[in-house]
Length: 246
Ligand code: NAD
Image 1 (cartoon, helix red, strand yellow):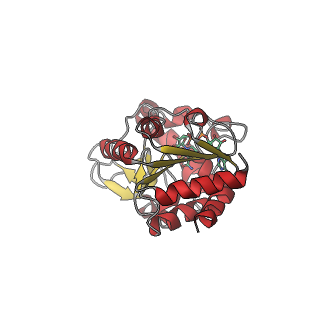
Image 2 (cartoon, helix red, strand yellow; image 1 turned 60 degrees about the vertical axis):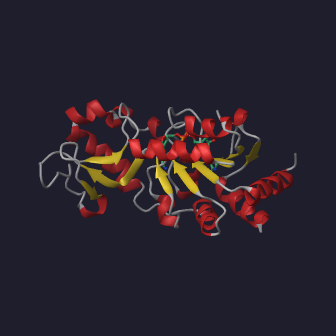
C-alpha cells in the first residue's frame, strides 16, 4: 500500500475509534535529541547499564549519580518536545486520542501538553527517597552537588523511574492494561518491542481486537502484530497523519 493510502486508512480508523491509545518508546524522542538505549548511537555503547541496576545503585549510589547526572540531568536537560509529541497533544485536545502510555522517562509528552499520560517506567523529573518514599521535583535540587539526599532520612535519592531489577509501579500497570483492554485503535510509535513487560501493553490491545498502527523508521518486534506499518520519522509522520485526519 502507498504511504498516502496508509495515512488515509489510519486517519479513518482514528476518526471512527471511540478509544485510541498511543504507546510510545524512545524513538519518539530521538528528534528531540535524546538517543535510544540500544543501536549504533545507543546510550549503552557509552555507559555501563549497571549504574541503573537497582542493587548496584543501593550499594554504590554516590558513584551511580555521577553517570545518572550526566545522562539524564545534563545531556537531556534542554530537550524539548518535537512535532510528534505536539501532534499527540493536539489529537488529545481534539478528542481523538484518549491516552498515552509511554515507556519514556523524559517528561516530553507532558511538556507538549498531553494530559492523560501513563508513565509505565516512571519519570526523571522526580526524585524519590527509597526509605520514606517522599517524592521531590528534580528541579528543587542543585545537582552540581551530588548525590541529592532526602531531607527527612538523609538517604540518597533515586530518580523516580524504573531501574533494571525493579517492578512496574502498580498504578501505571493497572491503568496501562485497562487502556489496552479498551482500545479500538492502538498507535505504536518509536518502540523496538524488546522491553518486557512494556511490550505486553500493545500486545494486549491487539489481542482485544484493536486496529494497530505502527509508526517507526524500521521494522520492529511489533511489526508482525500491526495492521498497518507506516515507515518514517515520528516527527514527520504524525503531522501528516493529523493533516489526513483533517
Ligand atoms: P528502543 O530503543 O528499543 O527502540 C527505539 C525504536 O525507535 C526503534 O525501533 C527505532 O527503529 C525507532 N526509531 C528511532 N528513531 C525514530 C524516529 N525518529 N521515529 C520513529 N521511530 C524511531 O526503544 P523502546 O522500545 O522505547 O525501549 C527502550 C527503553 O529504554 C524503554 O523502556 C525506555 O524507558 C528507555 N529509554 C527511554 C528514553 C527516553 O525517555 N527518551 C530514551 C532511551 C531509552
